[in-house]
Image 1 (cartoon, rainbow, N blue to C red):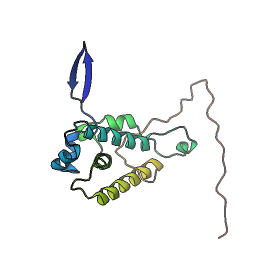
Image 2: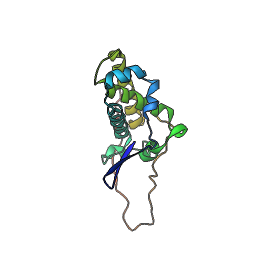
Image 3: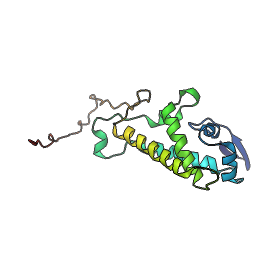
Image 4: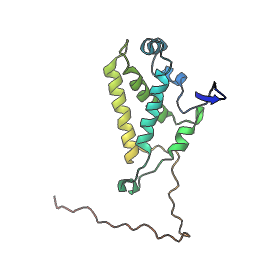
Length: 168
């Protein structure tokens, strides 16, 4: 939900996001959400935003040279702008698990914290595998990394060597 200020009045506009509050019903019960939030309407949206930011952080390439090692570079904007059935089911489930973990940090009302912690660790492990290229999801869109040879700029220079050979 986006709040828009127009002429001194507040107007709420419902927008579809990658992960909505209604999607959380598959990982946490409604009565648990009410107990933990305790009337705070912003608790779950903040947890969802934090989870989306965390998942995006794992999948977004940075300027480090190890991101140029040939692993797939995912189009994070396209992934997280998907809605409804267009969302990747595995990534959605991982994001829900992480959002639940961020949300239950407020309280431990009838929630098996150790189980939530293990699920969180497993979800983050999958994200790390996805980010390093050890796990590939074919249905996620990739960034276009082709080099335009028609540009006047020189191509990037890269050098290296093979790994050290041992007779062991």
